[in-house]
Length: 144
Image (cartoon, rainbow, N blue to C red; front, side):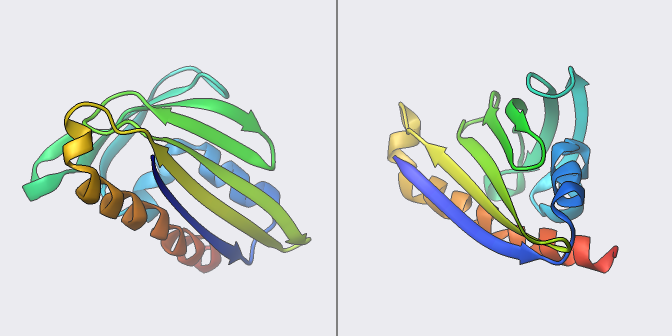
């Protein structure tokens, strides 16, 4: 199984960080690989977001996802439902103080079929994706 994880502390209240993450349309602001994103249906757990991402060789790939858990303000989980790799992921949030939040971004993937052959490339992409949480910190602290 491929696994990637990163944690940052953001100087914003936990509720504000959670609300920003729960609105999937904000992904484009901090995830450089997202070209386009829009809510397709639903609210809360079960909401589906359609997203187009930068793929290998500069081509566009789908990376649609469904929210699987929404526990305000501490946990948001999702599963990718379209695209070549379909990891599951989560954001775990913990209030460090009234104005500071620790966020852990985790991705897991059980490679199947062709994804087994592409394992090292997929793992590098997953590491890059969770590392983007440092950009989330920058965006949220800059808006404060």
